Image (cartoon, rainbow, N blue to C red; front, side):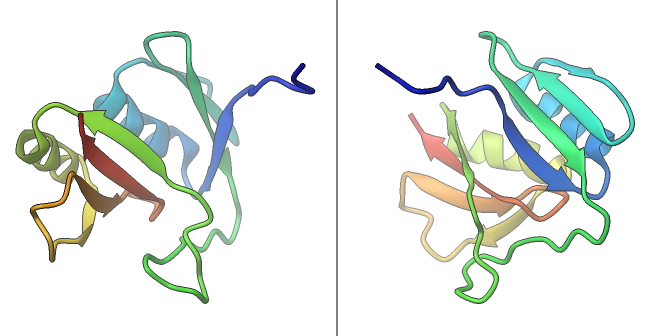
Length: 119
């Protein structure tokens, strides 16, 4: 029997509403709240939360000194189309060397790494 149930994944960031808006455009869903804590209710009942972190320093990828700490894998049907969309929304490509892989690495507007993964 499990000891606990996953409640929500929380991302520290400098502007919770802005980062929740970025992920709402990528994943769908509705942004709820303002201020230091904002929730994104995504389709299927899942949620992501965003918390203001004064002095926030983004992780670096790849880096052993400033590890990514965690990342999101986002499944997509059309890798090239999804890449265009996330870049237009403010993501930054972190790994463009090997376009033949089934995944590509990006940073969200606050610097958190995430991957687009072919389904």
